[in-house]
Amino acid sequence: MEPIIEIRSLSKSYGNFSALNNVSLSIQKGAIFGLLGPNGAGKSTLIRILSCQSRPTSGHAYISGLDVVSDKKDVLSIIGVVPQENSFYEELTVSENLMFFGSLYGIPVIEIKKRSHKILALLHLDEKSQSPASRLSGGMKTRLNIACALIHKPGVLILDEPSVGLDPVSRKALWDTIRTVNDEGTTILITTHYMEEADLLCDRLLIMNRGKIVIEGNPEELKNMAGERTILITSTPGNYQAVKGKVESLKAVVSCSTSEKGLKISLRDELPLQAVLDVFESAGESIKNVESGAPSLEEVFIQVAGEAWH
Image (cartoon, rainbow, N blue to C red; front, side):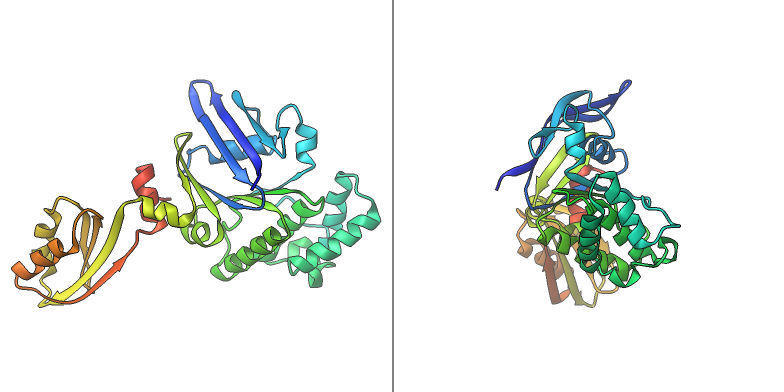
């Protein structure tokens, strides 16, 4: 697969503060690529540079081979940007908004109408085409934001935390919309704070922290890179607090917590499960059940970025 976005040694400084530090990255054409990181990680700075809103201090970024600085006008014609805030006009109808944004790109009126019909059907907004944007629900407004960004048929769609403020039903409907747009051939770059969204939606993920790339891979690769697994042990009589200290003393145990269901243990792969079971048996506990699972994406983030997810 050919890369559609190429970032080479990109840095951005504001005085003595380094928002991006020598970032290099390739994003393949047709992918849904997720950008993760805590506040201040550099995600927004990277998005602003790729969307031609900010110039890098050093390095280069290319979209479809076009430099985002020297070829700004051409880059803007092939990308669509969906910001967190609504970019459309509340007093205009859905169709009027698409007509307006289409005209900004010099698209003929007849062509805008054709594209609008297809886009509104694609995003399930066709029945709201004559409704004022102000009367749309939160989920519909997000879809209208996307529609306005798609009117000029961009090859790359950049979504900056599109799920913020949406209820779970609207959020899942948005995921379906993003997948549908991607199926049409559009490469998607998305920033998000929702781990479930990143895990289920993205082909590849990048975690940033303090302006640098910490780790990159598909969701399963990232979870496997953590080198940890979680087990939940249920036993009788269930004196988990008494067992907890002995389990924590095992060298490869990362964390240990008690719950009504049992003792939840995070441990590194080099520790055999039998070593944990031996501690339970030596404490007079009879094992009833053992549940094992891979680390979650959130656990991976905490490990590699070194701070809690917000």
